[in-house]
Image (cartoon, rainbow, N blue to C red; front, side, top):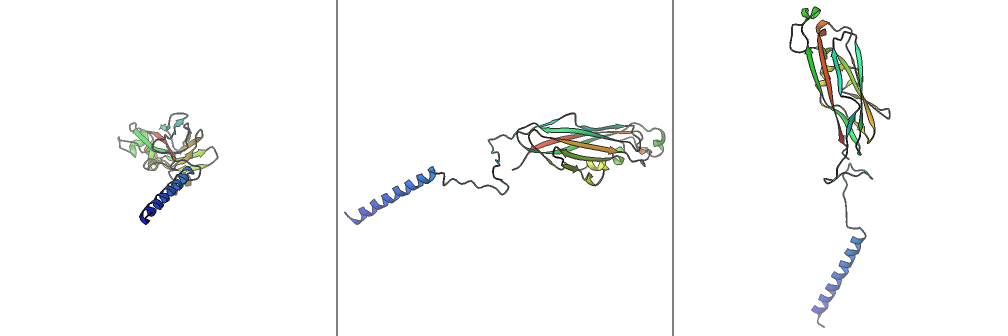
Length: 207
């Protein structure tokens, strides 16, 4: 047998041996690699494009936080909305936006002397509010910078969405809304009224 024939036979044997090794490794699961991102955690699955994330928000009542009219200085009040994630996946809850409508119902009595506007009221500039999420585990998350004390409603509605709070499947969170009209408020708001509505949103967690 010539040397070229022996070389080709040895080459075929080597290729067959390599093929057997590759098939054995594939059968053992070696050779399949998944690179997890830095944010991934063991045991946490990130939905793919073909999977559906199921988060759903349910409120125990309408989401109107305040409907104020004919309120006087030193008045106060509160409103609680209970929100629940009725889906199967965890999410984060925020106030996505707030909608404020102000009305000035005509100039009457003492207000005539200090306000001659007929467009919109000034009540939101004087009304101080505090908002916070209260979770079932006792965590309180102050919203719109009101953790250090109440702020004018006009400032709050001028900001973007609120801070977020985690909301697991089946769990609920309470939004606590409190307001007060300071005692030293003048007659400029006497005939004013306003309505404040909130839009809540729950989004799937980004794992």
